[in-house]
Every structure is written in structure tokens, then in C-alpha cells.
Amino acid sequence: MEKRILFPLGLALALFAAFPASAECYADYKAKRNDPLRLHYGVIELPDNACADRSAAAEAIAPRIARDGWQLLNVMSIFGEGGLSERKESAGTYFLRY
Image (cartoon, rainbow, N blue to C red):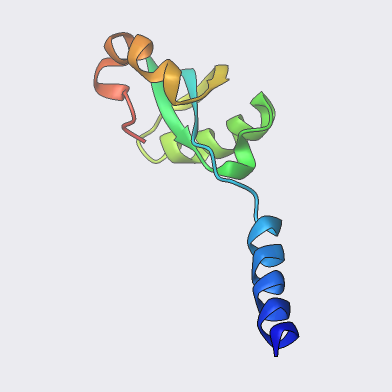
């Protein structure tokens, strides 16, 4: 009887442990629009698959900001939730906009 209970419990725990913990990550970036030239600095939340490096982040950011006519210039950094407050004022209206 004990084996019937322990096996499903052990299987459920193994499956739960197989899924990686999801930690939020963010990036700060610079973008531009032409005619007339406009620049902005922004902060954006990234999907988990874009947190590994700047090129993955750029692939996630570029299409999201392009919907409003912005062209990504540079991904400055990737950071965790702890870095949000220090960037909020600088990003202004582009703080978590996209």
C-alpha cells in the first residue's frame, strides 16, 4: 500500500523539479525614430528565453518597439527586479511601456 502512494508522490515531485524557476528579468535599451530624429531610453520586461544575453534580448525587444516605429539601437544591460527602481525616472514614459 505504501508503494502505491509514494510512487505517484515521487513522480509528481520529480516533474515539478524539472521545470525551471521563473525569475523576472528586464533590459534597458536605447531606440530611435527618424524624420524628425527622436531618441528614447526605455526599460522592458523580457520573456525567460531572452534573459541569457543581449542578442537574445535584442531579438525580443526590436519587434515590440517597432510596432510604434522605433528602431532598437542598443541593449544596454539585462538585470533583475532589483534594478528597476534606479532606472524608472530615467526611462520616464518608456518604463515598462512595451
